[in-house]
Length: 193
Length: 193
DNA sequence: ACCTGAACACCGTTCAAGT
DNA sequence: ACCTGAACACCGTTCAAGT
Image (cartoon, rainbow over all chains, first blue to last red; front, side):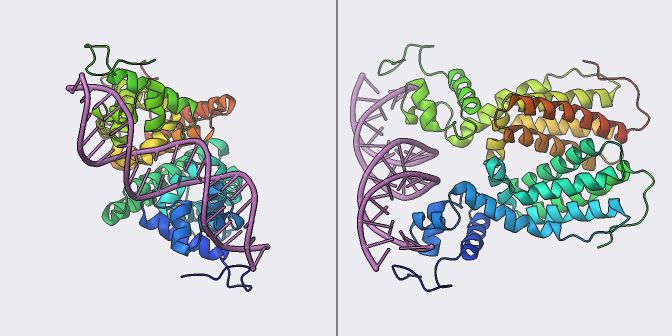
């Protein structure tokens, strides 16, 4: 698509949401090396520098993508009174979000300034929940978060092999259940979502 | 250092080990973006294409680095009869190796073809050991490997902050102990190294 | 406010040529 | 066998200029 020069009419210009959507497409298609500012601009029919007005530089773009992709994780049912169920739901959603764009978590780790506010919110919520069911909330937060990150990166390393990715996803669920059952041996019931 | 043209006298040419050592220096200095074939060649006083004769392309370089850095992990005491102690020693050594060059594990993940044979040997050995002490060796291998990878990447994300890195390393030890004690509740004794 | 072209300082990799 | 220069097709980012 070729755009007119000069000031665009409102809503017709290069919109932030368009940029992010196209960026995610590029990330999923190109196996990690595919998302560059220049390729993104080309796909949008725009010069690379145009992007700087909407998302800033590379870090800004990644941070915006992180916010958008992981935002839904926090829209998790609250399960009052059943902390373990909420932890399981929270981590499952996070892992699902990671799995939907496996290259994103890798891109973020290779540019740690891009860790967004949302990722902090997730770990904070997790810590709060863990405080209710264990005397070592920090250690278990580390275990659960690092394990989820590691599993997510394993997913990215499959490089689009659907079969392999599916096997890894099934194993993550088993591992999570195993871990949570070890956390509170006297557990009962399942996640409430 | 300026090198003579033409065929070098034996031992004086550009040696593989020199390349790998300098590459690790660049990786540690440059915070991850520092290791490029061109920068590496410049540091060695050589043209970029010269490297292709010794380590191949980027994947070849990373694979060679992976082999070199993680090779020592397998030189682990064998602890016959005490699988849990050997697991703890093996993972501790792996995490230490990762922590010595935190950017390497990140670089490898962003180029999964670079996973070297040594990393496979480590997970294989781990699986064998787990078979001796749990009925779910695959799940626990996933948990332990992914957790170690995730922790290693968290280390890379500190970007040279020594204080923070030290705190993470201490927490990894606690987490590992916690996990292994949950694996076999009836455990006794400590690692034999 | 938003988009542009030109420029700068980089990349990995291939190829044909030198010794 | 090993190293070279030149070339190709890329990068991110800054700057000054257009509307």
